[in-house]
Length: 339
Image 1 (cartoon, rainbow, N blue to C red):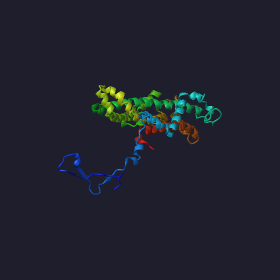
Image 2 (image 1 turned 135 degrees about the vertical axis):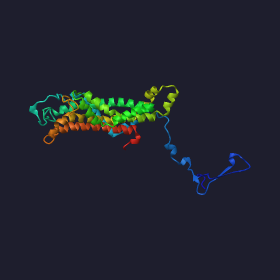
Image 3 (image 1 turned 180 degrees about the vertical axis):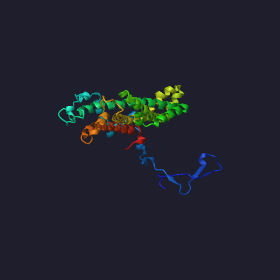
Image 4 (image 1 turned 60 degrees about the vertical axis):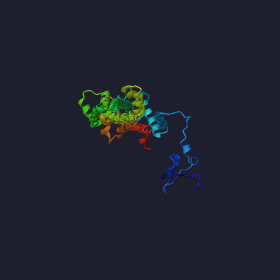
């Protein structure tokens, strides 16, 4: 037998009756049970498992950022979102025309110098309305996401951390709202308060039915995080439960919450456009993509371009936020990576 390949002895164990020392045990392997261990210098494990001790330690967020920087999906969606935010904040940089200035003499006129997208049925410049409609849609999406994430995050964190009757009570309330579809609930509530219309009313109604998914995700993440060693050590050092929750547990549970918030933002923009399309969302005096799509639907056969441009802007914006949500999900949750 080769000297480098030595059998690992296991099997029958016998003992010399004249001595009780451990070295007197003799292990005889059963037939066919011999195992051989390769020499360490012939295996690449030593080089593969080597850790560079000089490299600085990194956190989960640093690793996620390193992954995002190499993801083309994140780069493309990030550039689109930056451009959309610039248009929403500074629309006057892209057009000098008033979106509410309309002349019937220009009704449905094609594009011309200074009016690249032409005019709608009321004689309003389509390009200026698409530019200024960006502010409305993005504002509704961002404000709804912030309110729903804050409220749902607090409910889910408290329910997941304290458990028992607190969890049972908050979970049953969450189940009630979870049974109501977002769009259907928003339509019912907005129909009840049609006497006044504003952006804040649409934002609050969407947040009223949109916080449920955030609460459920936060609850599960907090329940997993609260049993980790750092929380137990903090409690042993005398930290109060409330301090542990907001100082240690919540910051370490934010990854899935950020993912669901980023993905939901695009859904809120679509919901606002749908409500405006149905005529129960924003007032007609507010320039929005949903309102323009609703007005242009009767011209779909004869002048489809009037409907096409606001629909294209809406689709690109929603796609950008959904792509960003997918990229963030892949970076913060490696188990759910799509590639």
